[in-house]
Image 1: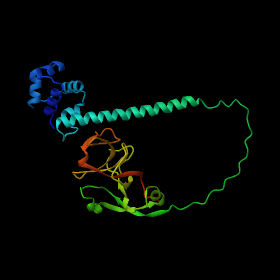
Image 2: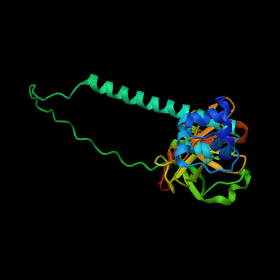
Image 3: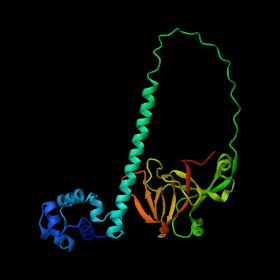
Image 4: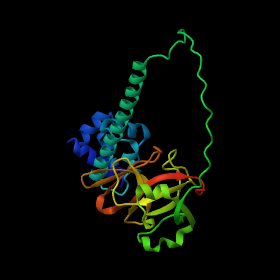
Length: 267
């Protein structure tokens, strides 16, 4: 979506004429008119003024985020993501404050000025014999996933890795519900780094903020966190240099949940 359409939408949303917006931004009515007709390139200082005035980012204005959405949908999606990020920030700050309060209540460690007690000898512990890890069987490791038909994904199988019994005891013993997948890219860094391997359990639902795999209508398989809002799915990444994505629920479906990661096959 082009800058001119988003500018016009935001101006109309505030109920301003071209002249009124020009006055607010300390520019001319002609400048606003030419920008909205795509006959003038916006200068960076004016772009930043507009972003501040409308309460959006410069990236949203010029159309590099939510680029496939109509102006109204793009602005609403942007604001929804901003609200979710604010909630996440507040939750982190509250958790940090709670941890700090607990540490303060506990006070400093003892000074060591009390009577010195003679340590009581403890019986030596015998080392338990090492037990071999038990495996249920092996499941596929995929180097990548792409395309809208999962039945065609066998071509992406790299090899087969063992699955421990401890996993099946917790999450169920149907081996067809598990597979491994290599991490591609840095969108989920530092949580998931490129080249690491994730263990996935197939399921169609995730709790908000859980990490999972999402398959979208255009054939892209995305590893991300999700949050749902009414009929929307918000997909966001731990590496905040990548913007969040907002899609209709009908466009994307959850393939599974990331249980854990590793850099080498279980032994």
